Length: 269
Ligand SMILES: [Ca+2]
Ligand SMILES: [Ca+2]
Image (cartoon, rainbow, N blue to C red):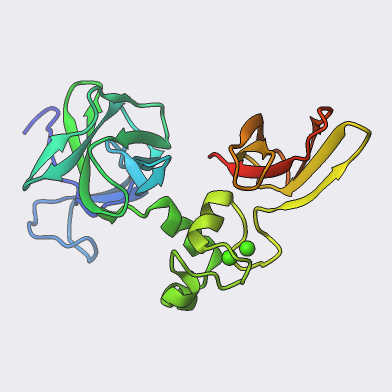
């Protein structure tokens, strides 16, 4: 046909977002393959780039933080994205977790607290990407187990072999023999494989005529309270609350009142 003629051609779905070449053969002979001779016509190669209109999701995971389930995903590239909606399957259908669209920031990570989920359970999620034009793209579903904070902590300190042995890695186990269970060491932020790493007062001593110094092993970020009583079984009085910045805390307490004091340190959070 005389003039400009337009032909459309579908791009295979398997094509990756990169440069490739398309070969066009123009001839009165039909059924030509990409190679091979023909008596007349024209052959031209064009470099084509597939422009990604989707989002590259490189990771999708969920974990516990302060008792809540945090769903986190990471994108490698975003094109024309306005934001995301997170959905979780409930009784066979997906329901929206996010009350508002999580705005796209041109690359993650993104985080959403799933208030209806609990650590230690398995869930099925999917992501809905909203494009600037309003159209939607679906990602997933992602089937995943949400490990509890304690389970993640165990995986840091114990080998796969040890994780299979409750006598070593169970909640109540004390394989390093420091008198504190794994659950207690998790709460205290101490090393469950090191008997010397444990929440304990290491010294209480007078450092003047009326001042007592209390020193204990601490874990950075943990919060402790120091209390004292006139007898071990008596009622303890709060003296100070302190957040650890290192592995040892030394505090002084005014004891200028003629009493003998018993001190204790409690982990608060
Ligand atoms: Ca222990
Ligand atoms: Ca320990």
